[in-house]
Length: 304
Length: 235
Image (spheres, one colour):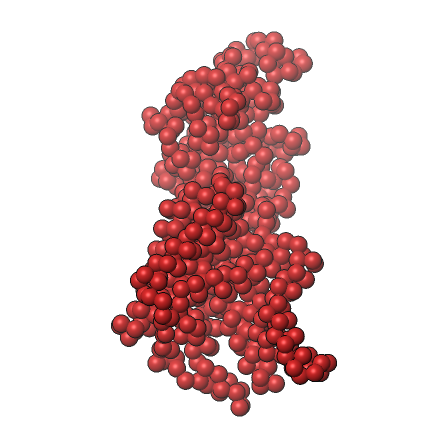
């Protein structure tokens, strides 16, 4: 039971990290119809800039601002210089161009920071753990990640439902031309949306910094999960991205933790472990396939 | 106020407009008449900057429009009610009205939700409904309200009452009359010639991408042959 609770929290924490990644990607994909493979690069930029600033200044707060600013700027630049020219192109062109951005970013980080991974310390205020249940200590930092992810989800929901910017973004998703004809500078709006999506990815990267190694190519492993999330959630839907991210986080984490135990009931321990290992890494893809069989457009398809 | 001078425009290789000229004066209601496919909507798209023109010029209150992006044209005071209404289906009625609302010309008595609801009381009852839950007539009222909320000095309606029930049509014409009395200039496309004769000051008749006739309502009434020849209406 304690193990289950712990794994549940781990799953949720992976889920909110995935949500930060997928919120931006699903908006860009759903509204601008651009496949942006380079979204993982913003995650990496957030992690690297955050880790570097934290290392040199010793201030995690400063690292947060630096990471958010750098990934936002990287996002706006990438949109204005590269992606804006791809909106009307075929998806294959977009995949090629943004794949090029990945190669560029990875190589650039190797040039600036070298091949060795960076390690980032958990900020002092968030180190240690608390007893969340009798006999179950849980790292404060991971709880903080969970809280930040949930806070961002609430904030995004408020922005989307309560503000005019949110309304304009949703309106632009169904009829871009009409929004422009009513006096909204939609090009600028999309640059901002893109930048904010990149900033959320950078935030995810920064928060993953103390948990994972900060290294070139770190964005690509999470990018694949992110695409699974937005396909499950329904492309273009932030609510879908949230639900999808939590589900994928839980399925992945719980699968890895409990499939071996479950299979041991049926198979010999050695076979069970090897089958479980491969099943666990496939679990989210099997889950995605199941969702798509039942709901081909994902759980919350955006209006179109 | 609006001065369209000898514009050419088209889609790709196929040219649709051949030297179209028209003008709308301050406070005037002007119609664009003609059968389907004669270039009326294309003219509207060109005015709003949704389609580039290849020759000629468009000016609004002395300012050249042809190089401006659509959003700048809208902010100069042209409110579009597009063909097919194009309501934001995933926004509620209230959100449709508020999302793009603005008063960039600093109108002294700007439109508000209340004034739009005074014009179309039905919308007030449908405040929380999504765009795709409305009837055609309600969508058209919403499209007009949405355009008014950007506080235009010229309202452009592409197909004001197409496909709507007679009762709803009357409501829309009534609203346009009220707006005219308020001093708003209106450029309207419609096939409902009798209603247009009553409300409009001047008419432009289009055929095959050209303006073939223009004149006042009285002049149009005196030439019934124009109706059958260019509008395909039996007299």
